[in-house]
Image 1 (cartoon, rainbow, N blue to C red):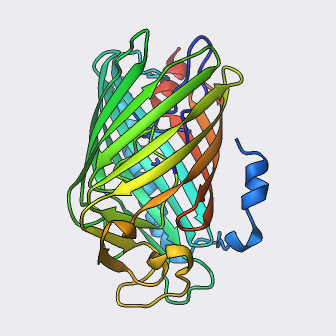
Image 2: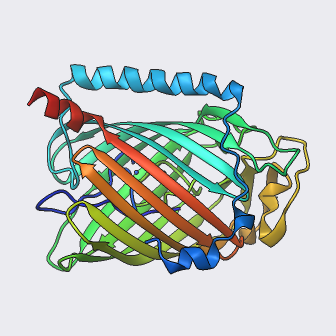
Length: 353
């Protein structure tokens, strides 16, 4: 799910940065009201979560920690400098994100390591390596917990500002480095072009986003919905999002958006919670990904629509915290997500100062 951009630092708007919004979820890396809509739609039936991580997942955690240390060392050697919201500075950056989504369809967590470079205030590029941890729903005896590397992604981005509207396009290409049997990859190179339009009216920033490509959850763009889906897709698709961000303070932002996923042509859906060759349980409200691991069909297979709401808080200039809620009308599914982001470059720069 795409949660909107986090709060801005003193003096200017803060764009959540990560990774990329997962991400999503997930993300340019990252993104971002919980209110009465949560209590209205969120029911105990949709909280079928299992938080206990199986023993075999610790190997994946160790690998993720190793990646963080390795990238951290590289950034330090390159004298990586902070590229806070807006990415106004030139130089290297390192951003680490731990995020997760949980619903009655299971829980998906990811740890993303993003190394990027800003050539100037207008142009930048990023390399992201995610590691996934998947916990299936407790009532699905044919599902399996899984841990592993996701797809390595590269993106290029622009930041074009004008008095009328700010336009921020990002092109992302992801390579099939993840496992297809675990649902971490489609087995094909995937791509997308995200187009973000927004305009600031003091504390209010309305936005409109169009993301066109051949897979959902491609890369970790910060404007992309932060939800970690329990499946991946392969097929032509466009995702539309529109809503407002309200910057209550320099550090606190609430946001909401409505979204519509519009695929066309042949589609492939790969489940992250069902083992290959097995038949799972569930399948209500079009959730066929709860029953079989791989499906091929038409556009209806991956269609979706709903709304998101999020709260983002930055206690300082190198930590970003986000909590989000997603309601999918197509799948009849409620999902709670969180994201914790660390701007390692900014942290190292502060210590040197």
